[in-house]
Amino acid sequence: GGLSASSRRSARRRLRVMEREGSLLGDGAGTKAVMVAMATNGALFIAKTGAFLVSGSASMLSEAVHSLADVANQALLAVGIRESRKRADPQHPYGYAQEKHIFALISGVGIFFLGCGVSVYHGVHGLFHSEPLESVPLALSVLTVSLLAESYSMSVALKELKADAQKAGQTFLEHVREGSDPMNVAVLAEDAAAVAGVAIATGALGMTHLTGNGIYDAVGSISVGCLLGGVAVFLVQRNRHVLVGASVPAYKLDRVEDVLLRDPVVDSVHDVKAVVTGASSGRFKVEISFNPAALAQRTFARRDVSKFKAALDSADDDLSKVERELIVFSSELMDVLGDEVDRLEDVIRAELPEVSHV
Image (tube, rainbow, N blue to C red; front, top):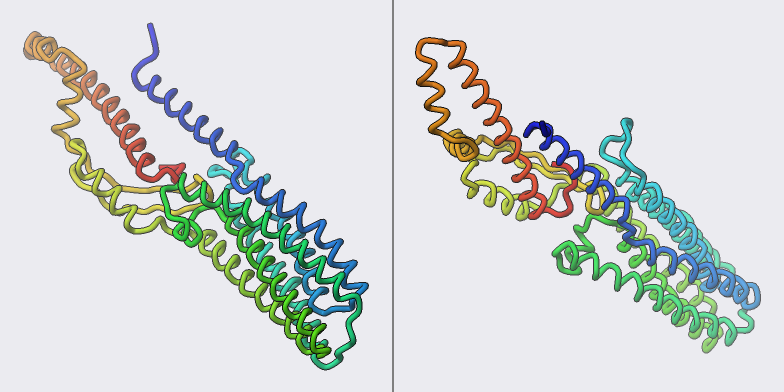
């Protein structure tokens, strides 16, 4: 004999869990953008440091620190991506998806203290201890190359983020504010700050060269630091929001509830909740009261009702035979209920693809 209905259902559920975990492990969202940004900033850090040593510009030092901070933080993001792809285990039954957010949070803190703190400190120091600049044309050339390289890195992150938004069924701005994956958002924010920072440093250095007034260079350094501080606060808030259990937007939950209430086997729906824990990773919870008549009809559809009636009629006053038939029917009813639960889980996941556990 083959497997029972309940055994087949259990096997299907195990297979679905394995497929889901496999798809999460294969999710390399943000990897390309992070690697491109890390390589770009590594090269720019060397170039900017050399330009600072030659020119003595505070803005150039801020930009060198900015690139160093970006390299360190993107390395953290890369570690977060790797850690988040580990399989779930008994100690972590929901997997490691939130590792991304932890490392992105650390990245934001690093930007604030290393990038923002050092840049602002050096700029304030330059306001009171201004020194003449040297080899400004060389420094401006390095900044021009930096602008091109940072723009390319930003275009890669922008392209990946747009693809992620389309996959999630969100607009670009919605995905930046509410999307479940912080990787490309973090890289895009850092690259956008880098482009803006290069522009600020170029303007400050140019004005200092034209006027001979070192105040412009110091103000440029402070401006770059404040820019980095703003990016850091955004990244910290963005990832903190997810780590404390950010809810799926209310309109999505309302949509799922409406779909469930229209289903013929559902009588009522209560306490609908969902939280996002990472890219394509979230938890959904709902309490459902099933329609007993609809479940009974679907159970009868699986067996010959006339044979069931005949079996009960032949039992006469033999309660053991009646009990046996009712046990068989109850078992089949439970199988139908299990299949309906599986079907409704698929319905929920179709409406909320970011949810992995229902």
